[in-house]
Image (cartoon, rainbow, N blue to C red; front, top):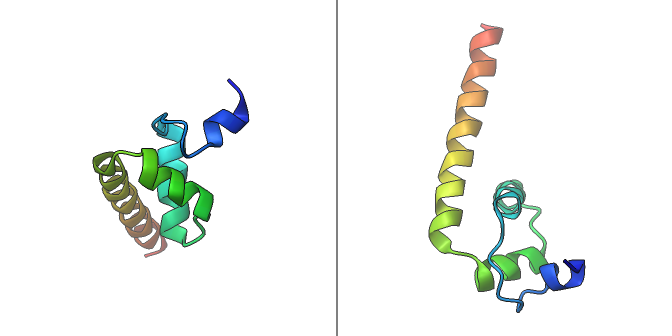
Length: 72
């Protein structure tokens, strides 16, 4: 598959699992590019991104708690 077609927001292809995960992590860190944000809003399913956001947040909180528990 041609990389330009995959990155085109108008291509109609939904983002794959890796693209969703990277998008959620970039958005959580505040470094999401406008090209990826546009791709997510035009081709992505909002439910998938909401679910991925909840999972990321849960894993992040559990990681922080785990580190704090190990330090204490």
